[in-house]
Image (cartoon, rainbow, N blue to C red; front, top):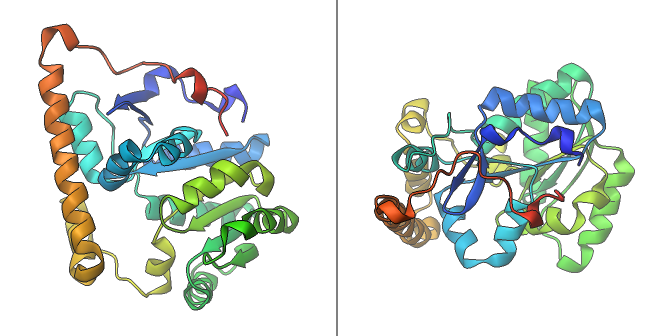
Length: 275
């Protein structure tokens, strides 16, 4: 990844020690399109409240996310926290919205895409739906996400052999972040975007929250109501920890001796190499 693709310093905000890019959805899409055109490789990282909490507990996940070329706020709670803590981010860049916008751009520009993730039946259902929605989309290949760690290198080689320009990873954290951190260069793609459970949504397996819920920042609650047993404990724990983080940071920033300006802080040396 060349330095010319990195956003200017004023577009960065530091929140909980994590450097985020203050980009809108449209600006993020444009950065991805530019990367394909210039021949650079761009890895997109997204963070929500749960991932912020998990990054503080998992050094490998933190290194994988902060090593991305662009890191945007996938969760509305992160955007709200940025405003409370005076490191304002312009808007939420939901991973699924970025995913769909990039698919539309890929169809319009004749770019090839590769899908990696989900169960085989879900992956097939999603692609069937995408062929109806984006009939001219060039699909270079697909592979389910239930593979052993020992198979990761071979899968990266398969992606590279497909000639795909955009790679979408429909896997959970930290598997998708760790895969890209270790094998991203090997895939040979121009843009890689981890989209989490978006494959399930586009396949029709999981229903996305209505726009009104999204605007209120309750998309997580809508998902919880669909899968209370699987997500209940996780959401309760991470949401409470995130609120505690915001409160702790707010107290720290109100101490005169600790006040620092997060805007414009350069990335740490270990991040400068990109991925």
